[in-house]
Amino acid sequence: MNRFGKLARVIVLSMLLVAASAQLAFAQGAAEAGNKFSTMTAMAVAAGLAIGIAALGGALAQGRAVDSALTGIARNPGASGKILVPMILGLALIESLVIYAFIIAFMLLPKL
Image (cartoon, one colour):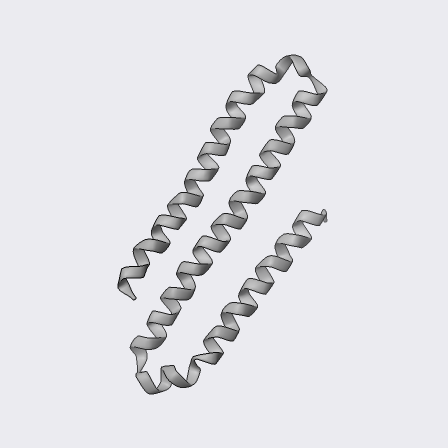
């Protein structure tokens, strides 16, 4: 496994640990306030995780796309024009997925 895969695992596990510890910290308050508080907490954690995971996945995907494109250009400099346009299109599509997750997370906020 390469170092980016190990880094991704460490980041995801640390995010899950933070999410689990936040739920435990508010466990007593949730029992006192009823079911609505735990639902609000879960939605807030879901919004934060959506943004975090989308940004992490988008950054890893963009890094791999640029790495592959630059490797291809380095091996065949004459093909840089044919590689550059699809790479930019792919980066735009990856970024649109991250922005879509960002918008969904902000759509959850008024429901809190």
